[in-house]
Image (cartoon, rainbow, N blue to C red; front, top):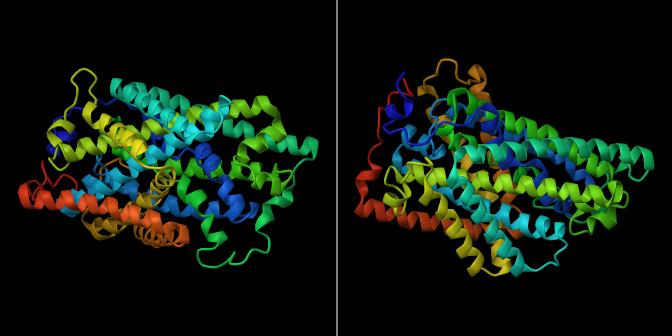
Length: 478
């Protein structure tokens, strides 16, 4: 059988090393339930009180609908560049380019968010280091460099480290959830009543209002259950991608949704003093310390650090594949350099280094508040990208072919896609409704504007690269 990448017009340059669990681990590591909840649980307690954990179910259902739509594309066009390829080949290269730029922006901001949070909220407390922004930034740079070295060395190394990180995260979250419940039963410190408590937000004005506390807390689910499409971005390195990649996308969201809810319930029940924990800098770590002691807290921080590292490495690797995919079509700045794949490691070295260089430049240039706003803007990019993917699917679904034996949701595709579109609109409204979203919105507009400038450059000086796609365009449609 002819390698399908040749049918799409590409020489096979990336090595197929990722098995089914490793592909699943790529998506799950980006989601990273432990990391997401660790980083947003304080927002939950302060915006809505403990009862806000139930908004997780709404977000989980909505994100699962989007995952099902994305899986339909992944089962038909399994190429590096995911949404960029889908938009380019099913609509036109100009639309596809903006899909790629959006994804590039959210992967870059995601990388900085993960590694910055790892440094300041996990590694520094783990090593008893006093809070210091300069130190945190230096640690972030070191972490990004290490991740890049590993990603350049071998995709297989990335997969092995990431699979181990996911296995540790899955195990530690399950064990800790059980241990917390047992501790509450044995000691009596904690309360099931927390599950319906508004905590410190009791009596707060505008709690149920548009952009109020209950709406704001949706960030816990929306900020955590993202990045599952990263498996699609590495499809050219997956074995049997028509089945393994779509299943990894849907399976990672389903697993993360269930595991995350169990962890949230266990944490919330284990709170013995809601006001005190709500005021803590790291409520999750405080709950662990109160219920399970210092040793368990340290073990948890180690596990979180491993999960952070795996998530950051997957984000970096996924970002490099997007840069590589756009560059081999001559549609990314410095594309002649960015498309190069090392013959020994079979990885795109320049495309892997670029996100690190951008990250270091941003960390060096932006003051604390501006950096935080940039990272916050990263929650808008995936919601916007997912919404556009759903719109694309609704526009082209009737002319999509079906691969024999590939993942398929069959006759449910239309209602699922419509529901996913409704959810995508709701998610964007939720993320953009708070007053604090104004600056992130400006940043998003600025990054899109930067992309539009390069797009304009191509339209004027290199228009032919946006006029056609390589390969046989009939291999995925009727």
